[in-house]
Length: 195
Image 1 (spheres, helix red, strand yellow):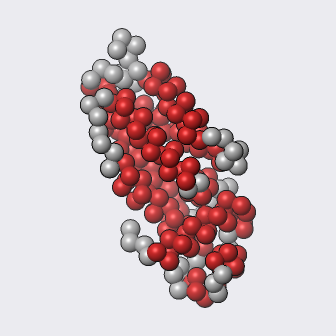
Image 2 (cartoon, rainbow, N blue to C red):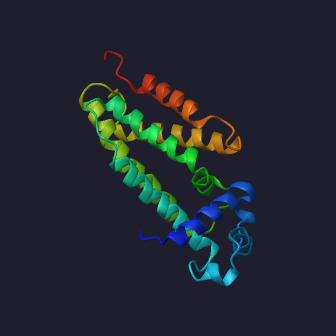
Image 3 (tube, rainbow, N blue to C red):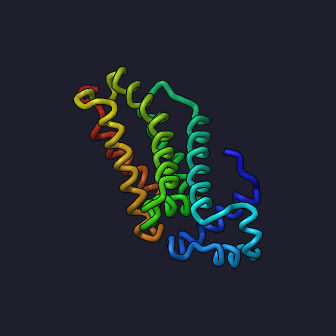
């Protein structure tokens, strides 16, 4: 996704508003005030609030794909899984408004474009996570008592719950240490007991 530096500034300002005021507070008027722009200046870059949120989610999907692609793979699937989630926690710790965009109440209602953008984030995560799980099962590191697809859903669901808890706690939890504890617990559950 091509995005200008000004559009990224607008996305970040929108994220700050989402974090402090929720979806209801994210208006073009409030965004213009936050950026010290005129409303017409915002409209030169985005046609609507929905377009800003979709751009934010698309930018997140592209960012996840780029960051996870840069992780140097290990021969140990367990280490690869840890590295993926440590990168997620590091990024979201620095940019919590992306979590807000995904979890804000009312965000997904009625907008097919927003739903599609959120689905694309899940597809990108699946693209990177599924090969790690399959490799772990093939090497006997991860259990084969459930399918790779089922393991992926368990792992992604647990991650999503962790991020939702962090969001619900107004980002007061220490996400990196609590996230790493979550990954450690997941690994205990999914590791092959004889490994």
